Length: 445
Image (cartoon, one colour):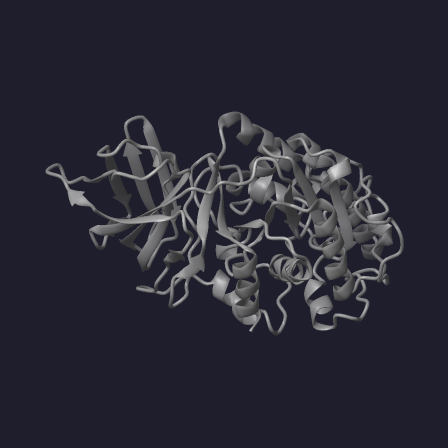
């Protein structure tokens, strides 16, 4: 994941749409059409003591995930906090301050409550606006014997979005870019910008193919394609033309691709073109033959490289006969503040500002216990680009360099993934081959 801001012509509307807070009264719901989805209306009652609650309904089967969509109104001063509790189970989830409309809570911790169990609802810094809510229950039966393919736009995206999921299954992790852009984290060590970004890309490629081993994915099942950070949109717009790195006069992926240990693709010269990227992904699909694919949701994730990772995958998938289950994750939303709240806390679905509910077949929440959260935290901490710059951690005896664009002594701040990514669940919207191809076509056009 890069901190580089890259917004081009045809993506401006999509990025602004994803980054802007939803206007008051704007619809922020989701619409699910999968065959295993149960959607029920629940009445929220106000109790004599002023609290609110609803009885858990009778369900068919045993769902693994649940969403509660309710209409609320928040004040403009502090983030809205909604607390669900039943017995020993509690879930606190936060939403940005201001506005009103549908908010979607991850209620998966309660998915297997007994019928009639009382779920208390507490709202701080806002109020429930309508006392009928929608409860959606999901049974996502991911294949147990197949391979899960996780596609990451940059080194660390796979870990941020899906470390717990891929660590729990037989997985292959493929990263599209070298991560050779963004801040000059190592400018004290490598002052020349071109040399710096080549060095940074090499470090991040090695991270991308070694750190998955902390989740049980060996280097033989991890691969970095070596394309260039921040350049996927240019490649997409000129699909047959080789595109250079942002800071280095080079259009060949080999300097980064040769650092792989796996044999998913030949470690030979390969020009950075969109057509080559799609061809590479098609080859990987046919070799891995995944039963589950994990990719960014281009409608909710606001980073152009993330959006175009899914566009490229959809083009490659259309050239195969594979019919995998597809899980969509979101790493960049709400100006990189989402999700709000402390690490370890549950978190809701990000806002969708469309005039109609966002469509998907289903929803899947992977529960993360304390041990899995610790392992995910250590995997993220191993990613060099997520840490403070070395000059902020160690004294190299080097005087400060005013040419450095980074601020190595600055605090990590609220956008740090150590706060945002390590939570009690990893959640995904579920689609299939047909709905993915339609989703991407609608997104582009």
